[in-house]
Length: 358
Image 1: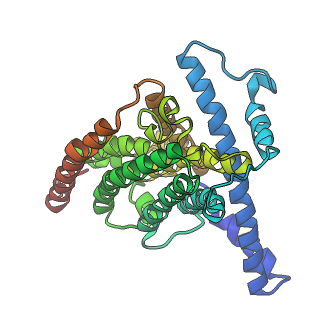
Image 2: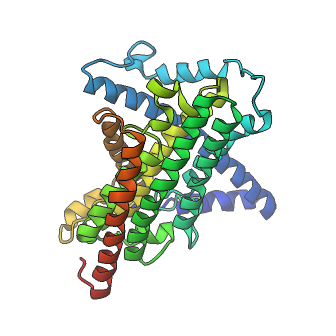
């Protein structure tokens, strides 16, 4: 499988051949930032189109089909429309916090986005506490949502923000314990180390029943963490107009919208990393010809393909199950998911100690 670090090292060597080291590093950082922002926007637009088409298929409709071939340019048209909308300034809002909130939400998803292992040699940040850093950064998003609800001086936005805070803080426990279960199995918190540990077999197979239980709980908790149906209580249209971002317009509303879809990709990307080998291809022990054929597929295709497949399951949840009440949502976490997760962590530790895994 091609190692993209050869390409990045060649670019670094080419830059340092005619400019100082500090200027070459600065140029590389700017280039990485531009590529990340472009990829961020394109993935968000793809996910908006993807969800509309999936929703339409579930409801026996066609979905977007007017702007561009098969409606492919509909998301770009919607983005352009949001960009030219007026930023409405309300009389009683806390102007500084009101303007800060969408940037906090987008910052949290951008930081998480940078940690994901995109391919062999295509990881931007890789250090020994990568998973811990990712979970810490994802927690910043709830601050932006709470600020958005509180600073808007609107009872609907405040209720939506409080619901979101309770929901995200609760389900972060389940996400953290599911991640901890797989980190204990991998023996490292380094994102690159976790991927390398799955070179022969993915953790979802290698980790037996505890890995499968951790994946199911992670998927449920990840859906709740991103405020998606059937856990979309913070923005329940029938009760709260649009929830915590009711008073936002223009590009500020666009930031919340983009962050929601990128958080969906990040949740799916972390699931890919922990359970399905990240960018590692599908390898079956003893099938050398098959494994060789799988290695021909570029590593970034493996990662993005797996993440989109898991995203499809999360979107499927939204358009299949009815919305829960707030008491049902919190009961699901505190009465069921959390105790099962704790027992599953103990079971995984026993499997590791006694070496009864593949």
